[in-house]
Length: 224
Image (cartoon, rainbow, N blue to C red; front, side, top):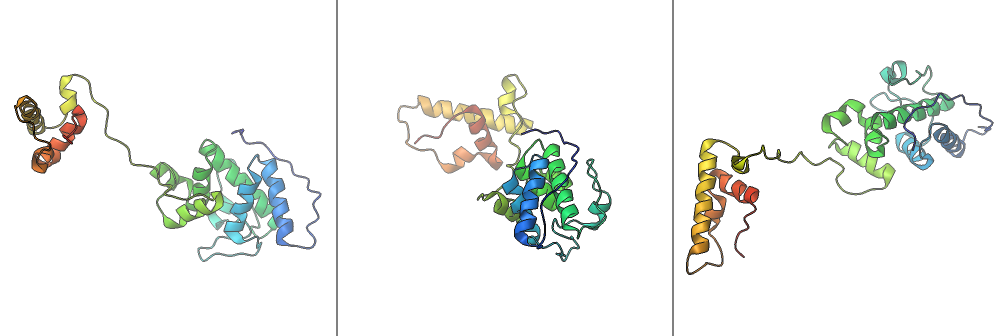
């Protein structure tokens, strides 16, 4: 999929009479093709937003078939042309397609992120590094893409070792001492004549959880 936006010059031959949802959705598909968007995704977006009703008005003030907020209509940013009348279905679909294309460009063609940005704002997607953990936004993306499961990006993992032998036991001095003591304890158990089949939970955990961290970092597995 191309990630660069095109300057679109639309000359529709589609007859919108009568004004039916089916005709609006056909127009949505044509706009999707013009803006290099998956037509099925854009039709589902419009269906999710307004059900194809050009006079739709949400409780939050989103207007028209593409549910455009007043401030976004006036100043959409991202090189998107503003819209004067969000209740005009042709202009509404043009704006919705152009704005969604801009969100795809902003997030490298990632459809879940672009959809989340259309629903919750690009700033929230950047803040959370992916689909925000809001139920409305999660359900919105899941419904359009027909996916299931948690869309929230996982939290960042632990920082990588800093290098050197002590990096395996990075932390405060007391944590390092505790971890080294644990290593000695494990070595002593390994050399003992009678090896127990399991270690006490308190031994594996250590003080304040530092023992567990040391075991994980050193790759030492508890005895079965």
